[in-house]
Image (spheres, rainbow, N blue to C red):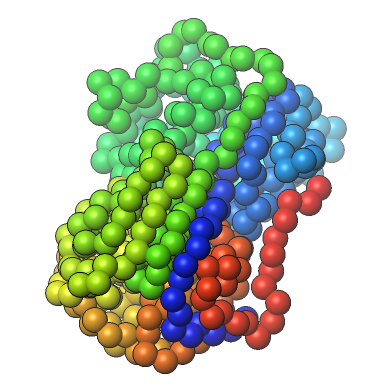
Length: 445
């Protein structure tokens, strides 16, 4: 699909999308909770749909009523004995990096053989972590030379273990859920070089909200997570509300900073989501921004915005909207943490450099830093998403004040995380058109 964005002025109010980080974790927690869960404000992105399909394949019954997702995991296969049918259970994680990294350790709870696969760019992401760690926990595993598909057979046996957290915190999230589900007692997970710490805060919060056994963060330095001998499963109906998504909301906020005067609703400033740090960048570059309890007002100042320095090591998903923001800043912007971008849906550092280069924005990469030369003026161009949802959204936001129209190829990539994105821009007054219907995903049982 191709999307065409023409220069536009934005105004009005919009509700931020549901957080897929929160939604997918809620699906995982519901799967292992052994009871009924009611999930309010459920997301409907492709990654959310993949998580729902996983828990359905594993025996969870779910339905949607009055906008709420109702999950019953009483008959979850991860706790059931070996099936009489010895054929493996097949699980597909779609293109969700969080999905594979979080669910693989949870699936290792099962005594049944399970084949885990994915699609698109996920097939090329490294999975060596599982080859190294799961056998230490008694899990049989065969991978495709460190990549998908994985063939695993549990059950996982929690014990004291030490892992590397430098590639992604999502591996740790999966282990924390798996240890809690297996009622781990008096064992600890030690972590070296953990990245994206705020996402672990989100994981621990979801575990707490679902009544799972939450490990103690020893010394609160994210270096060790200890499961005590007290197991506090709350075997009763859980009500959980999926948070508004700061990752998707960041694009709306940057759009307002570049081309409008808008209000974004539904973002909790007290959230544990890492990407709420976008507020710091928006303040540092000089936008007109006013943060309230459940809404944020933002507009472009008359004197324009200026270059800034930002450390995105713990929130690498902010790179795309930050680059769109920096493109309109006067002067140079430096963003730290570019080394975290190699194993995303695309190699985002190179993709941002090349696609924004087509729009006249100069981006240099130096060690762990991305340096953006504020062009002040962007030229409309034909760009490609590289099937990366955040690249498509970054280009669309940057196009709002470009000189001429911008055409985005493979524009449907947004469905991975924010299927309503183009529609939301249109509702704010943006001139957005597509050459085929936008896939408006909805939760369907």
